[in-house]
Amino acid sequence: MQSLAFKYFLEVAHHGSLSAASESLDVAISAISRQISQLEQRVGMPLFERGARGMTLTAAGHLLLTHAQRQKLETEAALQDISRLKGLQQHHIRIACSQGLANEMVPKAIATFQHDCPETLFSLWVGSALAASERVAAGKSDMAITFSTRPASNVVVRYAHRSAALAIMHKQHPLAKHERLSLKEIVMYPVALTDTDTSTRKIFDMACNMSNIDIEPVLESNYAEALHAYVRSNSAVLFASYVSMADRLERNDLVVRPVTDAEMHSRSIQVQVMEGRLLPSSIERFIDLIIEDLEAKRLAEPR
Image 1 (cartoon, rainbow, N blue to C red):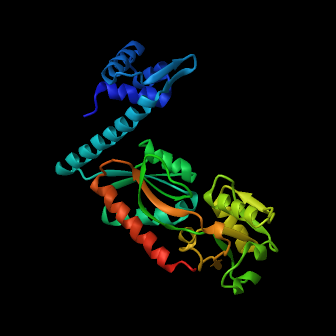
Image 2: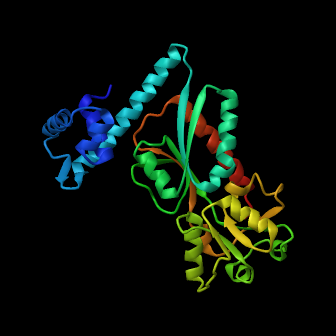
Image 3: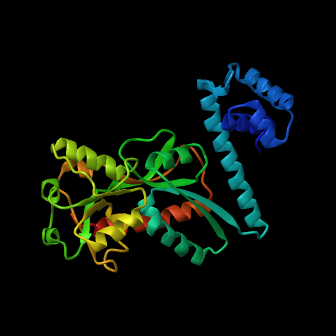
């Protein structure tokens, strides 16, 4: 089990001050400070830099934080397994994912999993690819299903495949008759784009820069559903991964077309977990389900 010193250490690291940790734990500041000092004596190095604005982790503190977070999660996993031995089957899986995957793919996978394992509870956090990876590294989420354009620290990639940003348009769009498109062809039509925090937008902007093309979006939004509805209603084009659109193309009268510009292929979709963490069997089973779904969509993706 996790020691009291580690518990207090995690709270101070999370809140950035002794007073905030004291309030969160309902424990005297002096008791927390004493445990932190004893832990630093055991380590032989300072774990925090003390300043007027609070406490920030040193390099040693960051290393210990990773270990403490992993230990906490593995303790929780062991308690879950013990509960299963007692006949209490409830599990909790915390997922972080990109918005496009949260529209349909991940919720459908959760529903499928709960059909066979109704005792499993889920939490779904949705945000940027980098933030999803950081949540896994910090132990706030058990796994990330997200797009990536660069390696992430303190996570292990359990599955990855290239996931291009494809052109999405109404099936009656003039460009729909082409098997493949370039940005120079698409520039003649209105474009709807996700916001600048998304991997799709980043590789789109890079592709435009490399091709010396200036494309001003007629609609920009951080809400993918708004972009989908907009494109269904006019001659605009948006960009998204096949995995995020596969389950809704036909019923929404949309089609996908590969984009030939190389930069539009410069990311992958990944399943990530915390480096070095021993995962509960329930999470391993859900990862297997997600990977099976991702692999099926990879094989069906137009190229």
